[in-house]
Length: 294
Length: 270
Image (tube, rainbow over all chains, first blue to last red; front, side, top):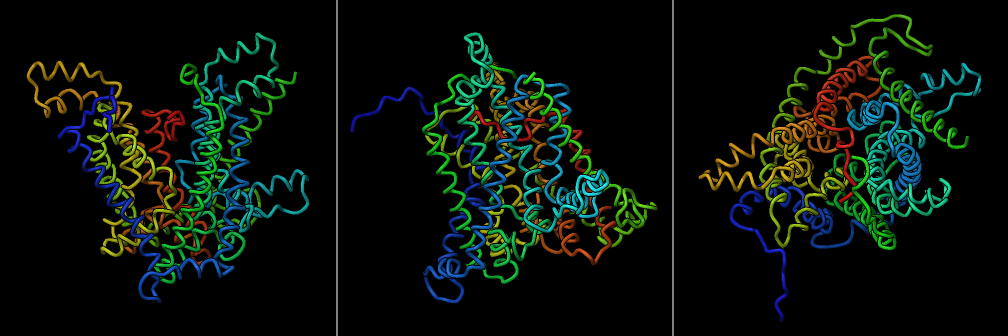
C-alpha cells in the first residue's frame, strides 16, 4: 500500500478525546444503541421464540396496519408539495427584503415555537364549524354551508401546513438571500425577463437547497402524530403509521411489534431521502453561495 | 404592472397568514375567558373562573414544577455536554470529524416519533421510563446536538491567536477555558441556552412517550386533557393552553433579543 499524502494533519489528541467523549457517549448510548436495539427487538416477536420476521409479516398481511403507510404518504406528499411551492414563492419574493421583515418573520416563527399541541387546539377552535373562519365566510355570504375542516383529513393537512410552512420558508429565505445578487443583475442587463431570470438563472441555483428542504419537510410530515390524533380521525382516515406504532407500544404493550413498525417508518423516510439525494446529484452545485445579503 | 400584482399578492398572502395565526391564538384566549360560548362571534359573558378551575383540577402547580425542573436540567446538561464538543469540532481537524458531525445531525432531522419509540422501549427496559429522569434523558437526545451546532459558529469567530497568546503568557488549558474562552462565549451560551429552552418547553413527542403519571410536562398534560375531550369543559382546557402560551411567548420575546428568527431553523448551506 502506498501512503496517501494527507495535507490536513490530524489534530486529535487527549484534549479532543476528553472534550468529545461525553457528547459522543450520549449520542451512542441514547440514539444509536436504542436504534440497533429496536431493530434487534423487532426480529424477536413476543409470541414466537428466537429470531423471526413474524412482526413484519403480520404488519404487511393486515390491511388495517399496512394501510397506514398509504395514509401517511397521502398526507405527507401533498403537504410537502404545497408547503414547498408556497415557501419558494414567498421566499423568492422576499429575497431582497421587504417592509417590516423582522416583524413578519417573527410572526411566521410563532407556530414553530408555540408547538403543535397549542396550534392544534387553536385550529380546532378557529377553523371548527362554529369557529370564526366559518362564521366570517358565512356572514359574508361566500359559502352556504360551513367548511368541515376539523376531525378529518383536511384538518391534519391544515395543522401540518402551519407547522411546516414557516420552517421551510425560513430555510429557503436564508438559502436564496445567500445567492450572489450580481448574477441576477447581469442576467437582467443581458436582456433576460424576470421569468427567464427565475427559470434559467435562479432556479438552478436554488434547486439543491430546494431538494434538501423537500426531504426535511417530507420526513417531518411523515411522522405526524399529535395533530393526526387531535384534528383527524385517529381510528379511520388519518390513522398514520406513527399512531399504529404508538398503539402497539403503549396500548397493547407489544414493544417488539412496535419496534418493527418504527423500523418500517424509518425505512420509508430513508427511502424518500435516498430518492432526493440521488436526484440532487443531478443538479448543479451552487458555486456562488455566501456572497449575498447577511 | 405585472410585478406590482406579484408584490401585492405576496403581501396579501403574508397578511392572510398573519390573520390566520392571530385568529388561531386569540380564539384560544377568548375561549378561556368565556362563561359559555356556542356559536356567535364573541361569547355573551366573560369570567376568569376557568383559570382557577384549571389550576386546581389539572394540578397545574405540580405540572409547572416538573416542567421547570426538566427544562432547567436539560438546558444545563445540554450546554455542559455540548460546550467542549463544540470547541473541538470548531477548532480541530481529524479523520472521522465528518462522521461525528453527521451522527450529531441525525437526531435533529430524524423525526422524534421515529427514534422515540425504540428509545422509550430501551429506557422503560432499564426502569427509567415514565419518570422525570426518563424525560430528561430522552429530551437531551436532540438538545445536545442542537447546543453543539449553535455553539460551533461562536467558537469559530474567536481567534485562535487569543488562545496562543494566553498559553505563551503561561496560562494553563483550564485557565484559557475559564478566563479567555468562557467570557467571549457568553453570547453563544445565551443563544444556545435560549434555543434549547424554547425547544424543550414545546417538545411534545419525546416528553409524551417517556412521561408517566408524575412526570408530565405542561404540553403533555395539555394533550391528555384535550384528548379526554368532553370530560373537562373546553374553556378550562383553553385556560391551561393560555398559561402555556404566555410562558412560551415570554420566552420567545426574550429569545428574540439574542437570536435572529432564521436561527430557529436549520441553515441549508452546509
